[in-house]
Amino acid sequence: MSEPTGLDDLFSFEEEPPARPGRARGGRLRWLFRLLLTAAGVTAVVLVGLRAVGLQLSIGIVVAGVLAVLTVRRVTAALAPPPPPRSGPRTPAGEEPGGYNWAARDALRAAINGWERPLEWSSGNQERFTERILPRLGELADERLRQRHGLTREADPTRARALLGDPLWSFLETPSRRPPSPRDLAAIVAELEKI
Image 1 (cartoon, one colour):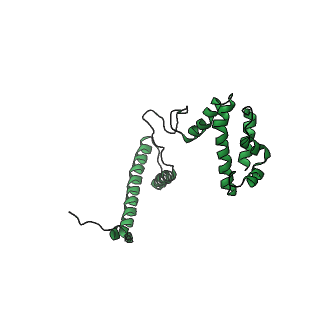
Image 2 (cartoon, rainbow, N blue to C red):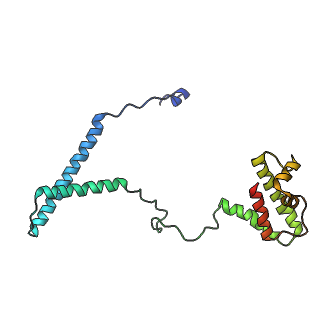
Image 3 (cartoon, rainbow, N blue to C red):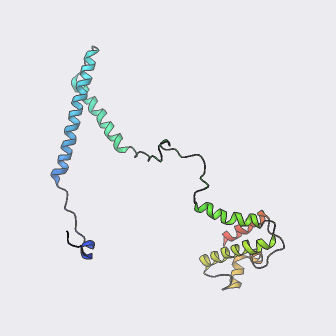
């Protein structure tokens, strides 16, 4: 069994030893040896193929061409973006399904539903609008006032009224006889966003 590790051991910082130059050089030498071996093999195949069809070309030109092709291949492989992850066995790489997944728990969808359902439910009923929507709009106005100006309608009503403007203030404080039309509601939301 090993000894238990203390907190000092876990939080201590020790610099890693520098990389040995022999290993990096060995890696480069190995890469160079592999490159030369590959170039020699490809050159031999190209020369045999050329002679088989009756063509003769200088060995230097073939070696230079093979080294150029191998270098370009290495550079393009280094610059290529990583392959896209596979999302499933049948999904082609880089493609997404065409439809929206309505069953997924999406924050945007939840926020839209949080407003869409109560608005739809109270569209023709003033009591429902006054009970459900008006308090939410008031909370939004208070939150905007708090974030931008450091006050709420309850804490400083005179300054809040000046910041909100008379139409928005009267809409929030005195409910109307009928729910506002979608156009009126859009204007109210636009006024809230200006705060």
